[in-house]
Image (cartoon, rainbow, N blue to C red):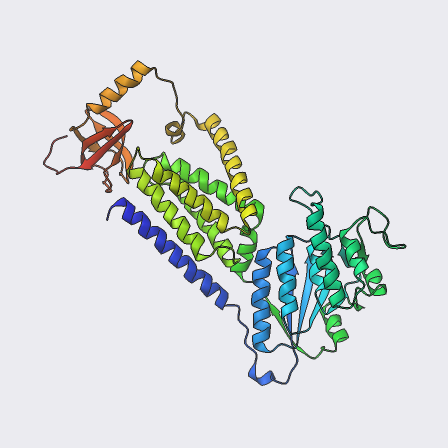
Length: 452
């Protein structure tokens, strides 16, 4: 099997195995209802922790689905979050509004920003004594207040969530708009952030409870069977990987690793790191529900085009199309197109910085010497070098390394960097130069009875 077929088969095999792994991971989390407890009240406890993002949404969709299938009588959201993505919080709010199972939000201990919106979408709110809820102004990635259009939209969502539960919407609006002043609670230019006692006094909480058992007692469900929906290792990994900073780092490692691999003979650590980083990126975004089949197929097509370009030098079109396809697939696999483009931009910047550092410290060593031009040749010197290489056509030599497809050979006592004609050639095999294309020397394996 030639190199192209081998690499394509390997890529397809890895992604098929990845999908099987993701499917199996999701199946481990189902908790069926015990047939012996059909008449017993059933409560599902769902954790809303850390940053609110689409990975959390995927976990909550699974948890709500299990609760509905098991015939749960109540869902308790134990909330402790500093907030997160507005679109993810909006989708979580929609999920909560669609379910017919009563929902209680147990704020233990923080429900700020997007967390406040999630709490307001519950039928009942119970807060820990030291709990806090509010400060829900929309901000950009740099922490600055978003534009008026985004603020207006979010104020309407917060107010609607409060009104749906019979709460005065002015307090929800004050959590978003610092210009809203409420005497005794918040002054002008401040965002409302309820303490537990304040929320209880103003109708934004129905009770104060120190722990989950006290919440169950308040709901009259102290004798209920409680099922805590644990987040799976796959969902935990997905939530970590889909964090914008982590996603950018993975793409940077992938791009730098693959670039180093393209300019080094054989296949080594840089290429392995690059591929692993890409697989982790797609794994996390697939589990989180971002990456669909179209993104993965586009990614594989891009890799195939890049491999074709490696064996068809001078055309360029395959390489360009491959890079565009890979970039488009990574963008489609992200939480949104904007976030995808931001991740690619950050990855490109980090790759440039890393390349500059490597060029400073490694420019005379190993692989990096093949990446960086060590000296400038004049036109006459370049022509002489090309003529010298052209004279190699028809000559035979010995493979010093395994060619798959790039590597090194020895011809007339001199070492040359070459590429094979599309097949893998073992170290020590006899080879023959069949053509020279600019700086590329292309060889093929010859019979053993030929002399080097």
